[in-house]
Amino acid sequence: MARTIVYIDGFNLYYRALKGTSHKWLDLEALSLASLPANLIIVRINYYTARVSGRVDPDAPKSQHAYLRAVSTKTLVKIHYGRFLTTQKWAGLAPPVPSFKPDPTTLTIVPDPIVAKVWKTEEKGSDVNLAAHLVRDAFSKAFDEAAILTNDTDLCEPMRIVKEEVGLPITLLTPVDTPHKSLCDVATHIRHIRPYIGPCQFAPVLTGANGKQIMKPADW
Image 1 (cartoon, rainbow, N blue to C red):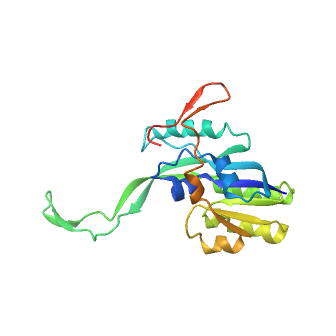
Image 2: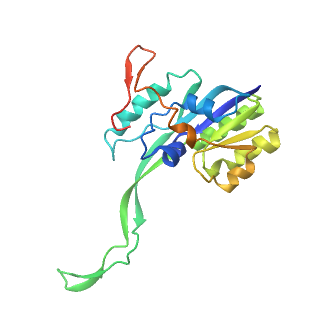
């Protein structure tokens, strides 16, 4: 029986498999158990995420907080937080080609702008934390096999180190139908999670460690 640690790239999971679905109330422990073969004994599930901003959706932080409370009811799951960085940056405008129009103050022909200042929200730290923890745990023999849920090719090199330099197997848990070839090349096994997402949902109402109820958000 192989001791296994599962590493979940939370935002990759969300954007690749959950966004726009009714399956966001996902039980990560149940998903891991369903996705992996029975000979792998899960000793820990590391979930990498960051607290979302309410700038676009004011309800998003409240919904995420409820979900993180639900995740925390599972003793195998440990949440690791990155951070969101929101900045204003100049960005080019997409086609169509800008039109031309007269400037009423000068009656000269001026083009529409081809750049604009936009809000840019970036999640920082989660992929670095996942990679660092994966390699550290491999060298310290914290697992016999690792399972990585992602489709982010930035994780190819740490996965390669674990497989080729440490000599431990890695299962890629893919959230997409066609995982990136470079990830497949460094994985020992590949398993698809989509068939298990729907069945592996939390109950609509849970009880937290403090005895208070945790309610599934209405739009989830």
